[in-house]
Length: 427
Ligand code: GUN
Ligand code: ZN
Image 1 (tube, rainbow, N blue to C red):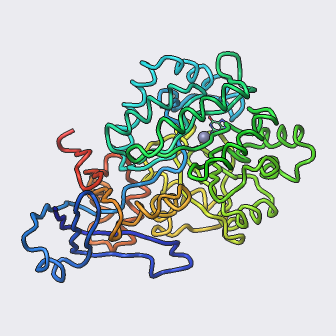
Image 2 (image 1 turned 90 degrees about the vertical axis):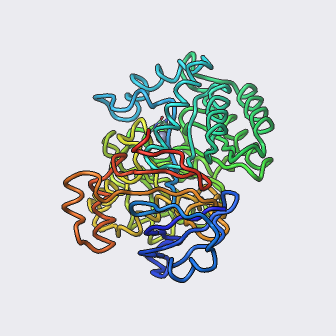
């Protein structure tokens, strides 16, 4: 058993509908046993009851570990690739890079760097795209298991992919089933059926992905949706029977309460309504949407329909591994559509909101009693500018400054299951 003393902040539910969801202890105590939170509260009220437990001081603002609801590990080395929007960017920069993951050794090396980079940025859980190669999933899961991180992933299905980066209906199904069986119940890992996007799979493979999802009630479904206008036009041209992009997936059983769709920048109201009814959600990726010139996610529209939302970086189209900084970009993107995103809501999107999307909110996301002790120590004085801006400021101002001005430099420490997994001062 061990205890941590410091300033704690968490947002367990969407504060837009429930302002009580914000929980803050200026001087708090968090007691952890076997990696799980067994008590949390005001230090002065709780300390007496746990007097025999050793206490570690946490320097900074402690928030739940970030949950990245959409990121691609094989694109780590192609972040910041110049000059194209989605479909051309994929062809020119991304597909060549992903072909290299046919090598397990290459996949191992990138997975190790990728997960360490997540920890350095305060991300403790993530829903991750690998590549079409079965061994790219093994590489990621092995590295996540070694670090005790909560990672959900699944072999990318793309039987219409380019030469050297495609599977077939049969090989995609066989590899997916093998991976589900091989990794079931191990560590903090989970599986997601992952058709790349509607344009990369035949109707037969999309239908098979829907069948696989139905056969395995414990797995998620993860794909891209309505990100880019040219992509949307190509989907409309191919799926002429579908009411809209989401409906193209729906016809194959891919729109469920376990479905996570990245982007959703260009959606009609009908699709938002259907997302709400089904319980599916959107991983909002504002840094990526800006980088690829995709557009701005419409929070107002999503909120009118009660669509479930989380936050993703979408590296390598996303320009940062930092979900802290992505909260600041989300604010700017939302303002382009007329909404001033509340800083506590942005924090919720990056923690408990994403955890709900990933069906891991019983384990992580709000640092409540019974949850796993994954948390990040943020340093409001990480840079001279941050220190000036947060000097004497109230909680909302400090949080917002961290979101807008902060990134990995503001992550002093990251803890997994109550164990320090990253310390900026002793890297
Ligand atoms: N749509 C299909 N594949 C991808 C990808 O790798 N990145 C992004 N941002 N969108 C996609
Ligand atoms: Zn993506």
